Length: 316
Image (cartoon, rainbow, N blue to C red; front, side):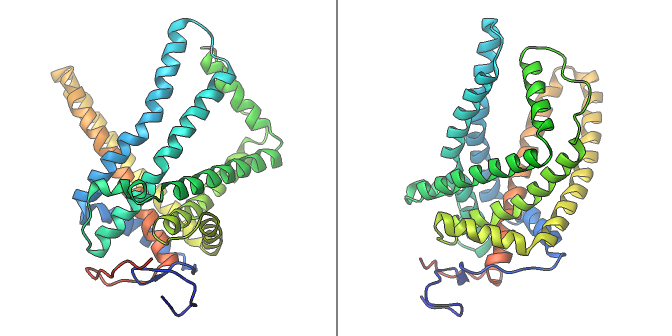
């Protein structure tokens, strides 16, 4: 299907998936606003899908926790190699979960376009045979993450990486961690924050291109990198907005925790019955908002505006 940018660009819902655009700084706040409100507009499919995704993401954590518990129960001190194998296993399982992230974007896209959206549609990449492509994207992104962290630690002398390994070893052996921060901690922290902000845009655009734009792995990687570079200012504004939202949320959570503590003094163990549902609800809100922001970031950078309620057929 032809479009204004060329004959070879595939379309999905009228969107040219080959182009990336730059937006103004205020776009970051718009992505945050639309991402958070997506769950309000479509609570049933998005919160249902978030619940399924949460269960899937918890599997690696449960496995690693079980392995740590068994190691502690045996009385053997945990070596750094143990953490390496545990991290490798968790990473393998996480890659198998990765297609569900793409599936969640499919659920959001359908809901926002007025198409039928179901929570179980997060499994569509597996059903439609696109899981390997998404996993491939996930592998390349992990390598890029690792390369960027190595570059940061190399530029700052590697003292923070050595200090962090000391902290892990001390924690594993139930010893006191180092009491002083290493030289270069401040600049390392700042660089990691900047890399993290860049990677939010990189990952959101790339995943959107793989999940919704029918792009190959390296095409999506290129689009993600170029799109993030073009939109560094709105990404910084998005980070600022997230900080403000987090401060407001922390205040609300603090008030809720204070009230629950008062209730706990009156009703004792019943407070756990209240804390667990609130904790689960908070996780669902975070997942819904996080992927809502990622979707609208991708759509604003790689897509065209579509009138609310107007759903165009998907064209591969």
